[in-house]
Image (cartoon, rainbow, N blue to C red; front, side, top):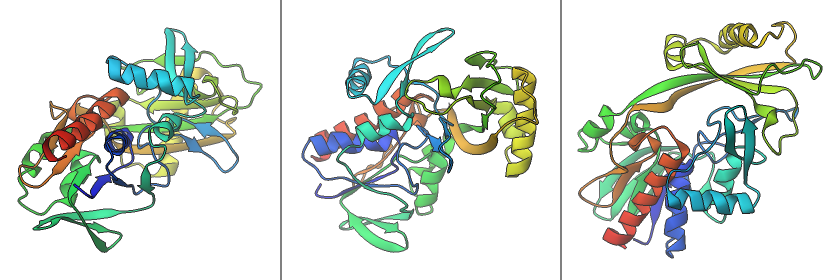
Length: 311
């Protein structure tokens, strides 16, 4: 295994690549975005406003991930967030900071689109920005529907990938005037159209003030998934103001983001999927459950299997 392509620079891809690098290999991480982290995302506007518009906080249920968070906190990449129901860990100064910590020193190619994979006698031909590069092995950590799009018709992994299902999530980002007092820090109402509302700027290390994030429920998101950007903001802003008491006419800033594959609703049921021929792996939080830790567990498990079986 002289060359390994890891597709996706979310937590799964970064965790996998970091473990492989620690073992002496040289993985290349390919990501279509401008920033690493995937749904561990931080939106920064042109005027410097900041919003964590996907994953809201991080929890650890396993020793390995707890150790990672402890080390990240000592390095200043993670910190405690005090909310009504206790303390949660968040990336500092943004949720993406944990991804930056994990990905430190990795070979990551941003703004790079992978469009196809094809098995060959030498390994895998990977089409990257229209050109073909050959790798000994490939790890895909993009959502299962996007992984299917990379494969040739009839590939044996497509059937299992197609069984995985996702909830979408529409997210609103709002800044209200500084003189308007926040009614709460977080509000979770799973049965409401906006199932989560948080004063995002109350997290540690944030410099913005009165910046809010509101996330719609799976049902509301699915029903309104194809709204255009202006309509999405208008409808979600009305819902947000109804729950917070803010005047819809006063926000300083408002925008929305469409997460089509936000949270797995029907997971694979094991840490990863792999082909039986040359090393080809598929992973992500969608293999286990919709949590940051699940993404890390999947990527780490893939790396360990590569080292044991193909190392």
